[in-house]
Image 1 (cartoon, rainbow, N blue to C red):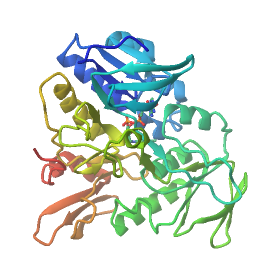
Image 2 (image 1 turned 135 degrees about the vertical axis):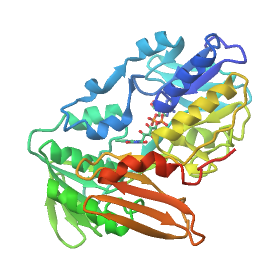
Image 3 (image 1 turned 45 degrees about the horizontal axis):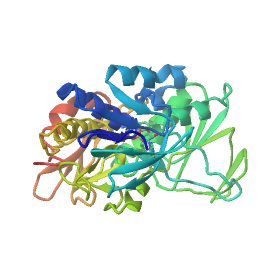
Image 4 (image 1 turned 90 degrees about the horizontal axis):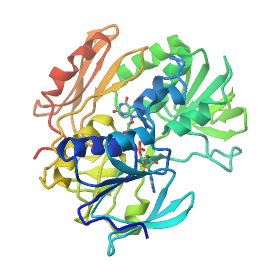
Length: 388
Ligand SMILES: Cc1cc2nc3c(=O)[nH]c(=O)nc-3n(C[C@H](O)[C@H](O)[C@H](O)COP(=O)(O)OP(=O)(O)OC[C@H]3O[C@@H](n4cnc5c(N)ncnc54)[C@H](O)[C@@H]3O)c2cc1C
């Protein structure tokens, strides 16, 4: 067993933006508390959102690395286990079981933080398997996927959500041919009113993207997909962007409460008072919030809690910028199931859509073109995601 830590030690599982931001926030408050980090990947610090506009800038995976694990560990006085998988949590002994390149070990914790992220929903069309279509949800994924491209090749993207449309814009801008297939009738179907979904589609089509909307893939070989209307789409590389599923297995197997994500209270505490969760794996009262701004705010509050100043997370309305240069767009969606109507103003590319409830309150918005400058002022008019 690796030397047991004293009972106030913090052990963070995951070195994504959630885990690393938490380390930085803890160190702002406390230079002395012992912090350990265990991560399945190489522990390099990078900004994940930069992956979906890296092609057009000619940036490979290594260009996106901000700090390697050793530099990060030294700067923030953290013990880091990289390429190390946590495969079980023993809550009664307050320890985790790990698989390293050198074998198995046990590490004890005082306070455990799960920052284990989410995994791409697997998509294995008939004729393609046995492994699912590639997805890009990490720097390693990007490194492997990008490594195989040659200029001018055709890329097939399955899914016209946030990640799918961002990659489609980036790849056409980088000179690739791009086809996008989605069962929905418009891009960003869950986030945009029809009119603005169509506008985004038109702009991406003008940039060179071919959309196949309201369609599914019936079968697929290594270089051709057959859609449910019989259309054959040839491709050199495919990307599945049909969504992410929070990583809940570790939490579930040790008896923590999970739903769509790992359930946490307003202090980000799980159903075990010594275990917390944040980032893409956590489900707050506002649901799973798989974006950067929420995890930054969560990390700030959790750092205080961990160093003995229990602090609830308060989340204002948090708009998300969609990185589609063909139509700069900012979305601040209403809560799922909210009732109301979109009121849309503006002309050309500069549009402002506000989702208004029957009582006249604004619940969400979408801004495009020059209107995106209004994102901060409009956000202040929206209901908070999590109020204290
Ligand atoms: C291409 C792309 C573009 C995006 N663009 C935007 C954007 O523009 N704006 C925005 O707000 N959001 C964006 N997002 C979402 C945002 O990047 C994520 O919400 C955020 O990076 C999630 O960070 P995380 O630390 O919670 O999870 P992750 O980055 O998934 O990190 C999880 C970590 O846990 C580790 N891990 C998992 N399981 C184990 C285990 N059992 N043992 C040890 N380690 C483990 C992994 O190795 C990894 O280090 C984008 C996402 C993608 C994929």
